[in-house]
Length: 93
Image (cartoon, rainbow, N blue to C red; front, side, top):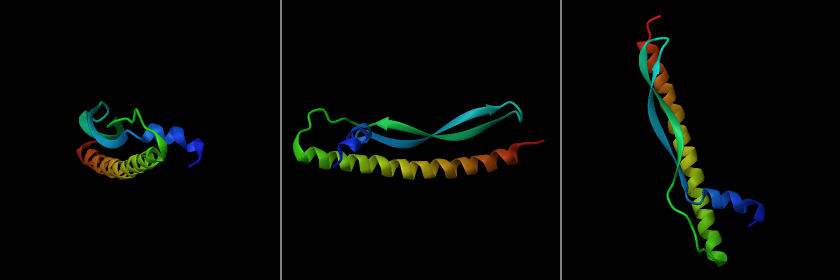
């Protein structure tokens, strides 16, 4: 494993990405609308890791973080499209 990837893998090792829905008030249309954002959450960290076994654990954790970013990112995009259509239906111009 290249050493240049090590900081990235260590940073991702304890993180997953989750969609979060927030409600915002649109002053222009005077309605409350929902919006999704991608949030990172730390689920753990490796403090005393040694030898080649650590590399496998870190690579696996990095893969989980990347997969959660792709899946959750897709959900955020789809959710925001749905919320945009919902907002358009509520708006009276």
